[in-house]
Amino acid sequence: MIESFLTVSQQVLMLFMLIGVGFLLGKLKLTTAAGSLCMSNLMLYVVVPCLVISSFQRPLEAEHLRNFGLTLLLSLIVHIAMIAVASVVLRRVDADRRSALSLCAVMANCGFMAFPLQSALYGPIGIFYGSAYMVIFNICTWTWALYTASDYDKSVLKLKTVLLNPTIISLVVALVLYLGQITLPPLLMTPINYISSLNTALPMIIIGYHLSQADLKAALRGQGTLASLFLRLIVSPLLAIGLCLLLGLNSMVSTVVVIAAATPAAAVVTMLVSKFGKNAPLSSSLVSVHTLCSAVTIPVMVALAQLLIG
Image 1 (spheres, helix red, strand yellow):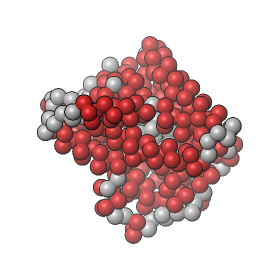
Image 2: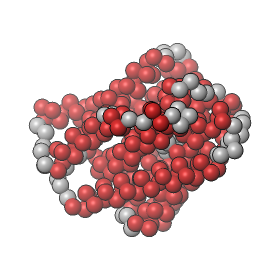
Image 3: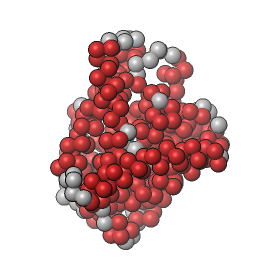
Image 4: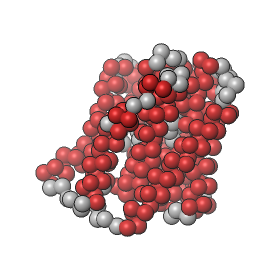
């Protein structure tokens, strides 16, 4: 376990060094909220789709398909279970804080934060399995998360919104290429791989910028903050570990899933809260607190997973 902890800690430390670059850029005012939004759009609409397509350019193997399906199932169970637990644990929190805390407890940063770590540990196959978790996350984002942020307004739930987002579209394209064993020519794959390589540094810089703007003291004050933090960083990965053991997933697939489940609250929480005029500064600061604490919890949870499953 110590060896696993040190290995993952080293990878997480490197990611936090990149976060430090974004933090300095924010503090020195060398980037702005508008610049951060542009970088986020670049990640969402270009880098992540290229990364997904690149990771699916591999030989078709029955075991990989089976593990991908199991990861989808496991991800779905984790999200449903976390929604149920959060609704019970946070039910007595003030209404003006409850939606942000619930969203932070359930919605993991399984793209920006998990993909770089999954890729660092396992390469393209790590992204292949990690994208299954991302599919469920996206469906959850545009259904339950949107519904919760809107104060349970059913009119915001639209099938078009669920299906026509960059991650789902890129995954469908990648799956068609993968199942049809269509290999893209070097003329296309070379620029796709160049863009995919931005996946590690760019999201960390974005996260670092948001940390530079956060009010961490304000985030830690108030009812429900620690409960939300505990649910996201401890309960979620422990649940994933238990399910991996139950389903008999191998060490690599389990580690990929646990990394995704152990990541801090996603930046999309702030976006949704802001969209419906809620407490955006609180949600942004909560995401930052989660991110800082995850520097310790992610290595511990991944090491624990590898000890129990490996």
